[in-house]
Image (tube, rainbow, N blue to C red; front, side):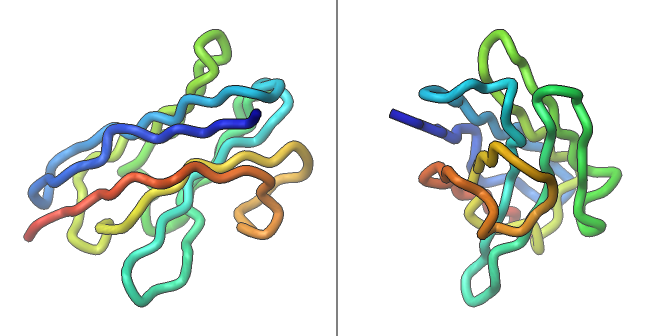
Length: 123
């Protein structure tokens, strides 16, 4: 059974940091692209970042570039999203996702989704 389990969300003040983790199981981790999406109330789901676990290529949305860093641990089968200098507009539910072909941040091309973790940034 495929599982993606997010952790690390919470409440933080603007300018603060959080680290989200995604623990993956049930599939061949280093054959996949792992992505992070977020969705705020009343807004569309937004692709934040993704990483190829096979070659380490990364992608960041312009809104988070320079503030967020994605990394993977192919031994522990985890992906981490380090978030710094958080802003109130980063408030959302963050989802860990996985796809086994292609590249990019089209949510419809991702095969598996976690349950999400809430990130709230107060001003």
